[in-house]
Length: 285
Image 1 (cartoon, rainbow, N blue to C red):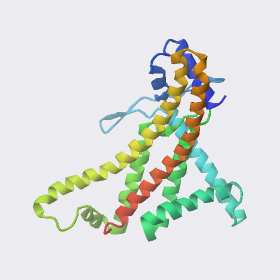
Image 2: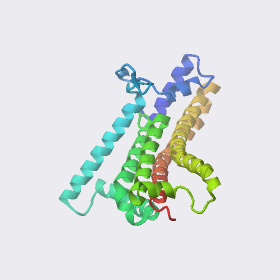
Image 3: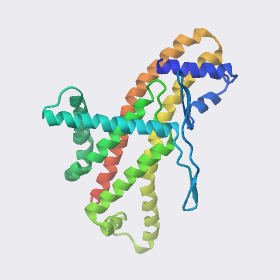
Image 4: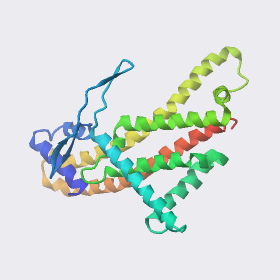
């Protein structure tokens, strides 16, 4: 079953249940759940744990469908990179799949990391390439039948953004020292009475970076899924088969576009992370 057929089946079931005239079934489809659902295997319930108390907050560590597909993406990236590393042990010249992966790695190094970070770029290549391949894999899994893009969940994108935020601060402190980095956040030569205001402004500016990374990735991936589901839903909204050819053609077009957007969003997240690391490392610029 293709992904478009899966969406059509979901819309048909919603219409049969009397939900075809509203968007409730769309919201249900993009909502996180504690189970996986497949056409042949049915519903697979995931283990549920009791919430734990962490610094006064109730934290639930039970896996959900987005968490499971995030683990799958991490496993795919791990296996993929392991196979590429082993191929280089046999031959220095890449071939086949390894050659394809090298194209992406060289592009990230030469067009993203080095132009933004400069002479200290190579030490951050492992982190940035991992971020790129992990996000790209998460995004592309949503195009697989019954697959889910973990980046459609804001908690996942927030986790990625927080990880990038920590790396940005660590890079700045490593290059400039802890006090030198913190001092460099505030512009020099300002009157003393303006300093308290500027400290607050610069602190808020630091927080806007992970916020922008979080919302950009989440919004782009979620909007693509909602557009696809909405186009499929037109068939059941108008309740006529004559809408189906146009609806399905537009759905296939959006799915092809989403394949490009999946790679584009991984590139943008990586590029912005590299840019912010470069700004932290080279504060004098």
